[in-house]
Amino acid sequence: MEYIKLNNGISMPVLGLGTWALHGKECEGCVSKALEYGYRLIDTAQMYGNEKEVGNAVRKSGIPRKEVFITTKLCTPCTSYSAAKSGIERSFENLGVDYIDLLLIHEPYSTSLEIYEAMTEGVKEGKIKSIGVSNFNKNFYLDFIKKCEIIPAVNQVECHVFYRQKDLQNTLEENGTHMQAWSPFACGKNNFFNNSVLNTLGIKYGKSAAQIGLRYLVQAGISVIPKSSHPDRIKTNADIFDFELNEDDLSRIQKLDLNKTLFGWY
Ligand SMILES: NC(=O)c1ccc[n+]([C@@H]2O[C@H](COP(=O)([O-])OP(=O)(O)OC[C@H]3O[C@@H](n4cnc5c(N)ncnc54)[C@H](OP(=O)(O)O)[C@@H]3O)[C@@H](O)[C@H]2O)c1
Figure 1 (cartoon, rainbow, N blue to C red):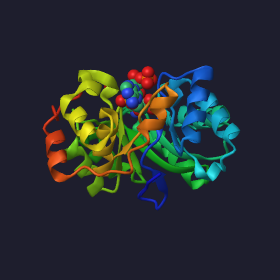
Figure 2: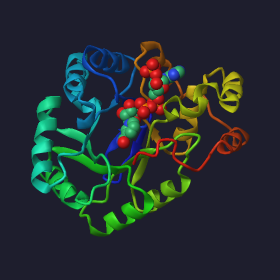
Figure 3: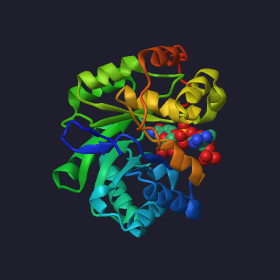
Figure 4: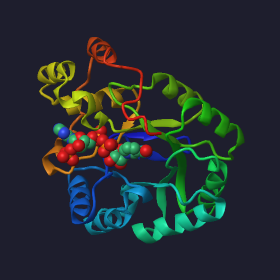
């Protein structure tokens, strides 16, 4: 596994397992398999309703807690200072851990600063290692960092070959925030897995379209959290560290950028 350094000096794996839409035994099984295959970051959220299963799988893996990086996120109803305080406690109970590696505000709220204040206190108490945001666009982010006490370590946003968000990444990096890609496969939209550019490059390197798409982001300094419910895919999705795309490959993939969201719900 490769790691990147966050603005507080903490190392975070560049690849992790996304767990949206994974529930119950299936979720626990997928997280267990991912850890067995070398994943060391698991991305969950209160909204996904699977923090318990993620915590169980991490504990049962026998891997020392300090080697596994757990991200979770606060959303509605944790949108006031006091609700965020209780929300944080709920995540601790669900996950069954004594610290959280990365806690994010799931999406921008008008009360984001007070949610973040509760999270900042968690950092000062040593219960939360890093804090950040998710789905913050450039303007919201720039306004937010003028007022918050701790610069977000991460902004987790939609990012894939069809929506690369280079301008946002530049702004985040200028200000010390790492960009992490959610839906790095565009959740299969736009016929991602059958894309001819990705598949042609896949043939060249003996890789799949999925692996080319992830490699493209990781080479650009973006961490990725692909989700799969299939153990074979979980395994191969992480096999992206033994090859390098060249300048010509990168410029071919860059041309796929449509420069607009494929989701549009945030
Ligand atoms: N912060 C946010 O607001 C936010 C929003 C969205 C997502 N996220 C996080 O980001 C994670 C990833 O995003 P996502 O789950 O939306 O989408 P994704 O990772 O881009 O794509 C997942 C889809 O791709 C399929 N897939 C995975 N590997 C494959 C492969 N090798 N070949 C073919 N199909 C493959 C999966 O199907 P199978 O499961 O059947 O393999 C699933 O349908 C989420 O799970 C969540 O943790 C965060």
